[in-house]
Length: 163
Image (tube, rainbow, N blue to C red; front, side, top):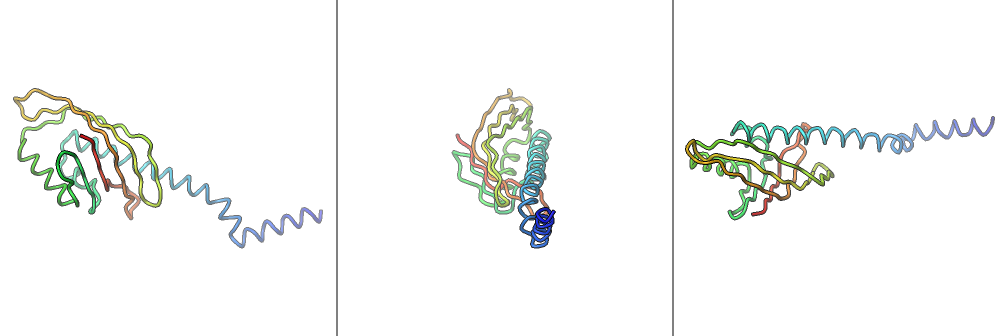
C-alpha cells in the first residue's frame, strides 16, 4: 500500500512539474503536427495540379512563398515571387494558345523539420503550345523545398529541376 501511494504521489508530482506531461504528450503532439503538415502539403500538391490543368495563373503564383526560387535549367533561376510571375507571364505571352492536356506529379522522400519540408519530385505531362500544334509530352525531376506559412498552410519555396 505504501509503495502504491508513493508511486501515485510521484506520478502526480511529475504531472505538476510538467516533465511527465511533456514526455507523454510530446510524441503525440508531434504526430498530430506531422499529420496536419502532411494534410496541408497534400492540399498544396492538389492545388498545384488543379491550377496547372486549368491554367489558373493567379493560383500558380499564390502557391509560391514571397522569397521563393525556381530553377528550371537551362535558364537562370527566378528569384522571388515577382520574378516567377514575370516568367509565367512571358510564357503566356509567347504561347497564348497553350493548353495543358495532362499533368501528373509524383513525390517521394518527404522530410519535414522546423517549418520546412523537402521532397524529390517527378512530373510528366502533355501540352499543346497552340491550337494548331501537335501535343508533346514532357518529363521533369528534381528537388523542392516547401515552407510552412503562419496560417499552417504550405507554399513552394525552392524548386530545382533537372534538364
